[in-house]
Length: 57
Image 1 (cartoon, rainbow, N blue to C red):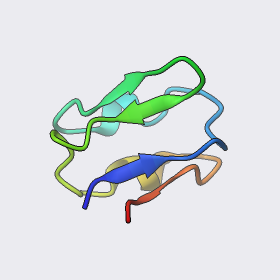
Image 2: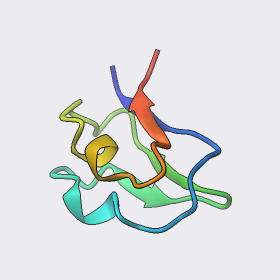
Image 3: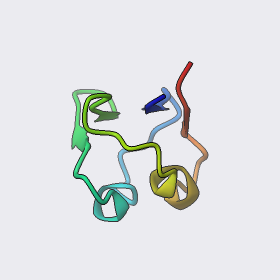
Image 4: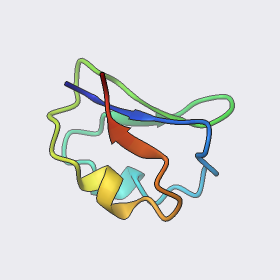
């Protein structure tokens, strides 16, 4: 199950460098995670200062 980024994202960029598979990219309103690339490691969620990243449904 891929991680997802909610509307709480402030586009700070903290999640980008910690993703080991480069699944995160900048979207129009917030960063987005490519579900096909995500390996469910959770490093991005641990790094997010506003808790905008969580495991997807």
